[in-house]
Length: 209
Image (cartoon, rainbow, N blue to C red; front, side, top):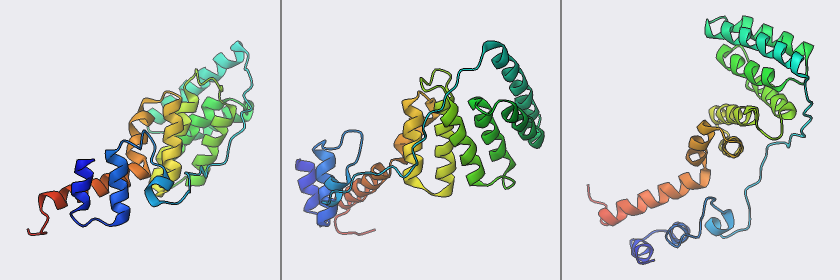
C-alpha cells in the first residue's frame, strides 16, 4: 500500500484514491465491483435478455445434408458472393429452423453485407443461434455466436453488452473472446486510466512539460 499512499499524496481525488487502493490491495480479482469503486452498491447488470435453450437433436443423415449445404454457402461467401451465401443459408433455415450453425453463419455473412444488413438483424440471427445451439457448447457455436455479438455490440458502442458477450464467448472456449473480454472490461479500462494518470503525476508532480 506504500505506492498507493504515495500516489494519494500527489493530490488525487478521493474517488481516484479509492480506485488506487483497490488496485494495490488486490481487492479486485477478475472483476471490478462498482460498490468498491464508487462507494455505492450497484453491481454490474446484464442488460442482455436471457436466451432459453431450445436445442433439438438433428438426426445424423439430415445433419450431414445440412452441413454439406452450409459448406456450399460458406464457399459462396469466400468467393465474394455474399448475398448468394445469405440466400442459401436462409433456405437451409427455412428447411430446418432449429439448425443453429446456419444462423451463426448467416449472421457473419450479413455482417459482410453492411450496410445492407442492420445490427438488429445480425443480432437476431445470433440470438437464434444461441437459442438452438447445443447447450454443452461442444460444437463451438455458442462461443462463436456470443463472440460475434460482442463484436457487433462493440461496434455499436455498447461497452457493457460487448463485455458480457465476450465473457460468455470466452466461457464457451472461444479464443478470440478470451483475448477480447479483458480489453472490453469497462472497469479495467477505468482503473487503467486512473493508474496511468497517477503514474504520470508521480513522474511529474509539478505538471511541468
